[in-house]
Amino acid sequence: MKYVGMRTQIHRNNRMSILLLLMFPVIILVMVWVFLVLLNYLGGGYYDDYGNYVTGVDFDHVMQSFLSVVPWVVGAVALWFVIAYFSNTAMIRRATGSRPLERRENPRVYNIVENLCMTCGMDMPKINVVDDPQLNAFASGINKDTYAVTLTTGIINLLSDDELAGVVGHELTHIRNRDTRLLITSIVFVGIVSTVMSLAVRLIYNNFLYGGGYSRRSNNDGEGGGGLSIIIVLFVAAVCSGIAYIFTLMTRFAISRKREYMADAGGAELCGNPLALASALRKISGNPGLDDVKEADVAQLFIMKPDEMKEGVMGFMNSLFSTHPDPEKRIAILEQF
Image (cartoon, rainbow, N blue to C red):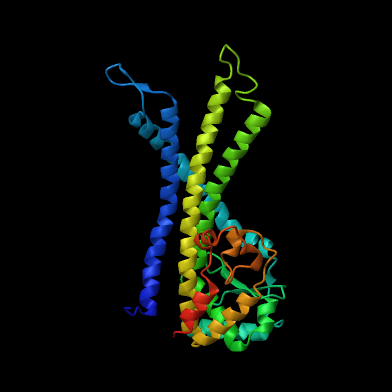
């Protein structure tokens, strides 16, 4: 097998992550176009330039409609990003129950973080702590003012200095590589599609339950047509959003897996002891904390996925949609250095 250097692999993963990230807006716009095509097809047909009735899709009309809604779609996405930009730090703190860690409370942790920051020449991020006896850690933030490394009390108390330095180096690498900004961006895109899908499904459910579109209002005079049309539109929206949601999940998880390997490599290089980070990962995998955080989007920031999020119906699906690589694979790679 051809040897690939650490920095070469990081550059390759960076390029791939950029390509994956670009897929998010493309997926959203493609699904909008598919939605318009299906609606046009369900309309029954159209008259061509010669006055002939044609059964099929009027793609000229679809493109006109698509171009007219693109600014609204782009505007909605932009607005969502503005909201996420100002609120993501507060949302993560609420979800994890983290609080600032004062230097006088634990100078050991501050010394480890400061030494590693000086080694790589980066500004020191904020340090937060979660009162959890189990082990976990994560980095968050989208700029220098919001970058933070969060540790559980368990990981602080149970890891040696070298092991903790490896974990902190891993999280600092996430910040240096702009992983946190990338992952938060992916969370925003997935949130957009998820919200649209949930809204469409809820509207369909409410229409059936309370509106009775075609089941309650239909009669021989065709008075149920409007309700049935609404049901069809909402059903198409739900199907398109569901397909888009699957693609965005797969894309986001692929980004996360690649970034974890990169952060492991960077953390090992930064602390100068790959075996210490491997030892830390082995300890964390045996008792990963932050189980109370139920949001999978937030959990993808953690160095190790909590136990309660590992259960599933099929191992293949767990692997496909897992936000983190298998711990044993990560440990094996580190032990090769």
